[in-house]
Amino acid sequence: MKIKTQEISNRIFEEKDVKLFVKRIDLTHEFISGNKWYKLKYNLLEAERNSFNTLLTFGGAYSNHILATSVLANENGFKSIGIIRGERCADLNPTLKLAKEHGMQLHYVSRKEYQFKQTSKFLSVLRNKFGDFYLIPEGGSNKFALKGTSEIITKNDSQDYICCSVGTGTTLAGIINSSSIKQNIIGFPAIKGFKELEKEIKSITTKSNWQLNNDFCFGGYAKTNSLLINFINNFNKNQLIPLDAIYTGKMMFGILELIAKDYFPKGSSILAIHTGGLQGNKGMNQRFGFNLP
Image (cartoon, rainbow, N blue to C red):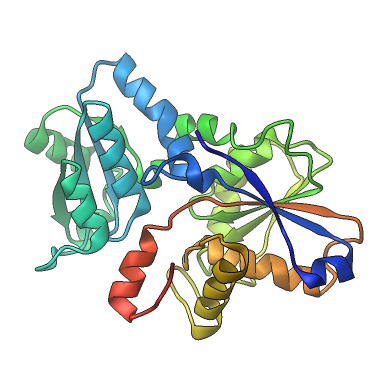
């Protein structure tokens, strides 16, 4: 895996006496990038251990997880099935098109049906339709994913603060579990309401050196505005690091705002985890006419 940690340069960092580093786990793989690689790693090993030959998972039409699962399955000799939330569009978006090109069988269910995806009755219907399969939850979040995401942070990552964007909470929990108690972990949720998310994270970690900052979700999941889009494009131009508009762009915007407002004490070092998700920019560009990297 090609993982590197880059220091980010900015005049304000010198002024505030802080250092900012980005851990580029987005470079693990072109499609199974960032936290997706870590979340799927032990799920794949478990499927192999139990002699499954098909992976089935869930996601929305622009899901990074759906694409990552399709590629992982294809590269390791598995069949894959994606249960997609919502009706099928006449033309596949870039995410689903790539998933299909990597051999994933796409099955669409209504948003109402999708709410029951975790019930035994719903899963029984799927097994009757597709046969036996190894089930990976939406977003890949389970105990095997937690084991994988706990490997994102190593003893070499000794910064005072570790920041990460948050979807289901499994990646942040893994980072918390492998952090030093002296480190401060800040999660930047992609969703607007985060009480249930906070509850979920508390259920899978025993440490208390973390917090969620919901000030930079830009209105909620997949919500954007021109300020965020311009920030992402300027950041890529100045630092040569592409960000996505759902997760990492919002996190990085938040970190820089907090630095400007003296949130971090002088002399602090900050590590931002780049969790990937860049393929989602293609869908954003297609839907809204953005020019994201």
